[in-house]
Length: 227
Image 1 (cartoon, rainbow, N blue to C red):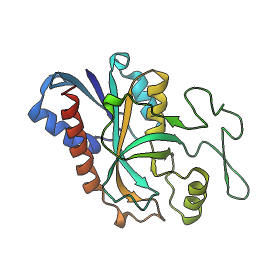
Image 2 (cartoon, rainbow, N blue to C red):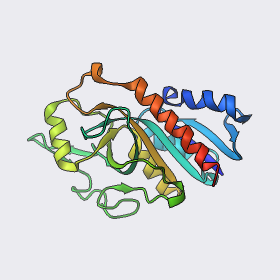
Image 3 (spheres, rainbow, N blue to C red):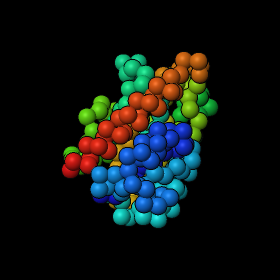
Image 4 (cartoon, one colour):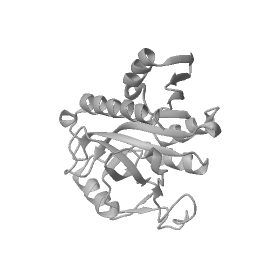
């Protein structure tokens, strides 16, 4: 199998690279052989635009059997413990549209600028109908993808009421959009570093989230080697 591991920043990928350097065969600058699978790490940069562009420009994208997007995220759901690794199976662009005079948000699907049920969308959502053999034993949740993360009480309440998402990231929907339009099987794994609340980085647990994320990813790659 050919596996593409996609992340926005090198920080999120460093533990995996360290593991591969010790436990895999480095075939080239961009490729490792691990348990008979080719693994290609790819850092795209932060945000939806760089993620989608990075995937489209990856030279072997059409030969990839499974693309894996990893990263941290914020959680709207307080029942999810910080550091929990999740499988984001439903995502959408959460700030693509217009702000109305009363502060509410109208998205491009409601404006009928984009057809909400035209491929790859389903009611404006991007759904990941992953093959069963690739599914991890993780909680499946929904997410929104934004260019500006929500950090005020009012904006958080408005977006929560509109989409009722579990998580928020800056890349997930772009990753799913690119993979679905290029017909590449994919999975999005994210670890919760913080709750979506009036912005307070003192409450964030980034180190623990990254450690849990990479531990889960490495376990997942080990299990894939048994297919």
